Length: 308
Length: 258
Ligand SMILES: Nc1ncnc2c1ncn2[C@@H]1O[C@H](COP(=O)(O)OP(=O)(O)OP(=O)(O)O)[C@@H](O)[C@H]1O
Ligand SMILES: [Mg+2]
Image (tube, chains in turn green, red):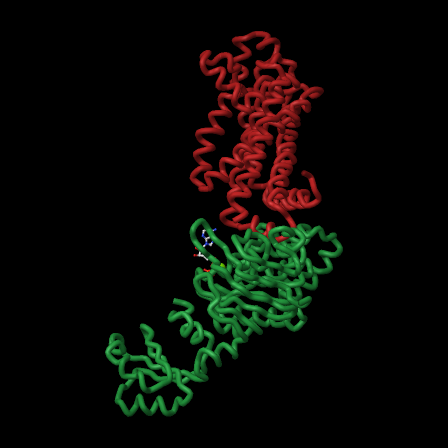
């Protein structure tokens, strides 16, 4: 039990009559990377804010680091780091001033902050920008600075709400690399994302969230094994054609998904499916075989794509 | 109230001010100075020429400077309750950043007003020094006006802060400025004795915190008999301060603890 950092049971969040989080259960263990994967409005941020003790829960039980966030908010916040969905750095201050001010909020002494600032800027690859005004940083740099800032109090766990949304692919990879290093150092990461590749890269275990509930839980490979075939055949047809054809695929794979722009055949024998498509002279515009991903898991569980 | 964490907010605001003070010089220093020069000294020549010996032996420029000290400080106080409040809520989200630390909503609110007190002390002191240098105020008593100016300024800023957090749209700022702050500034008695106004308006001026600040400053600096007993003005400003502070605390919790 002692290595359980977070445990939630029937956790709820309501805004007026609206149920943003409709009773969820999960546990996060020491040193693991735990993810909430879900589309816009799934309730990820609402959940993270309750964990971070900045939002009161509407029902259920929640324990974080052995504390009740509703009762010991300040004590809890002193021991965690938060990377919020939207950046809230001080644009007018410099990079190192941002870290200094934030360290002071944790009542750290100047020499402590200065020593950590040096290390953290190195970690965030921002040492050469220490005296730059934050306003002049790129989106990826700001995100790295936000992560560095969240580490100023040497937190026991780090909450990351969509750490790479809005960044270009290269900036995302740099950030993943940094997060991976933290993970290797044993920092417990809790992150939300609506990118399946991010979830696959960073999460040891995740829950798939949709409309305020958890649809499934497990390691990425377990979820894929459970809810999708190993491989998928993806077919694209000229616009308007697939609607007429979709009925024909039923017997070509264990499961068929017809999306607006493509048809997905989930099968354990892709060669057989491909030759059946060819035998029936269906002539798709493109046909490709790929490994199943969490996107397919999400589609299976909710009937919708993650990013629409 | 002034817990270490509250002081962290004050420290942050001071650091922020060090980076941004240039933008505040015009509204909190140059503008009051222009009023003093144009009305106090310019118009004052005309007024004093028509009133040899001044009003109760006080020159018009001293009359204006002592009132303007409080009125201009309050105007700066109102300004501190506008964009500096709305920006961290709506655009920079710095309140969210602060609340993810051990800081509480109460420390943010208390730190905000303590910072305003510090800031207004700077504004009032700068104005006082310049007034003394220009010979508009007597060097020995001028500094006595700083306390009532800051008290009335902070009291007014609590009311403005609460109104801005309630209204929560940038359009409200222009409205408050045009329909609340500027009329109060003009009718606070800084530029002319309000007993010159029609009788029915006079009770209204008694409600304006700025009027009490102006009367107290003038009383302390020039010894001019105030329109109501000084303790009434002190009590009234303190009551406004407490009410505005409480309302702000309630509204911050309402906005931020969701
Ligand atoms: N303060 C609020 N008042 C009212 N409704 C809210 C509030 N905050 C969130 N919601 C609603 O709750 C639902 C869940 O929001 P939440 O921000 O938790 O989703 P999310 O999974 O983080 O989505 P996204 O990927 O867009 O960030 C949404 O429908 C949202 O509109
Ligand atoms: Mg979110």
